[in-house]
Amino acid sequence: MTTTAVADIRRTPLRGMRAMIAGAMRKSLDEAAQLSHQGECDVTALLEHKAALAEAGIRVSLEDLLAHSLIRALQQHPLLNGRLEGNEILHYGAVHLSFAMALSDTQLVAPALFDAERLSLIELAAARKALVSRARAGRLSVNEMTGGTFTLTNLGRSRVRFFTPVVNLPQLAILGIGETRQVPVVGSDGEICVRSLMGLSLTFDHRAVDGGPAAAFFDTLCRLLEGELDEPAQA
Image: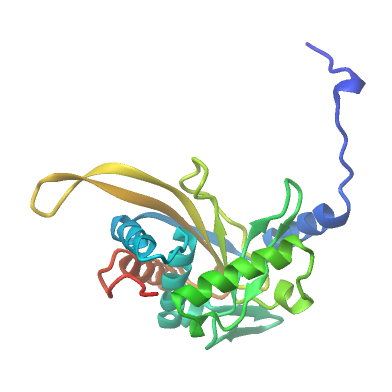
């Protein structure tokens, strides 16, 4: 058995922002009855729409496009858009969408973009960019840090396809974006074609949301992203 020299061990005190994050994650797992739904969504049309917007001089990220469809899905499934406070489940008409973002290897915040359902795609992209800038500058308000009704977290730049994001209490649910990869798919005509599939992971608090409504929300979101229910989000 190899003994590691004391000098080779790096010690990081669990304090400050890291201690706050640790406490919030532990509290969430201790209190909420968390369950995750996972699946793949065909985002080929969404990527094509993103490229068409770029050609027109409109630059938005894949996360912006997904968030725009997510907001529409939440409006159709308000049971997932809310908070559990005390003995009350609060369902909101407005979508106060929190975006989880890592400021460093040890700092994670999830500030909310209020009334996101009122924003066009371009307005959403600009507002999210401004939110990230304020977070990096340490200028977030307490209300932004605590007032969200649903959280979006993105690991799409990694090789992680599915994961189990932890609910941002007292919110009811959180959606995780995973890796997007090209895979051969058998079409309805029997022909094989290459499609871009994104891994999505939805964790929800089973105290407030049952598996059926969560699955229905997940299906609506994917159908919106795939263009089955509507055209891809316009700018």
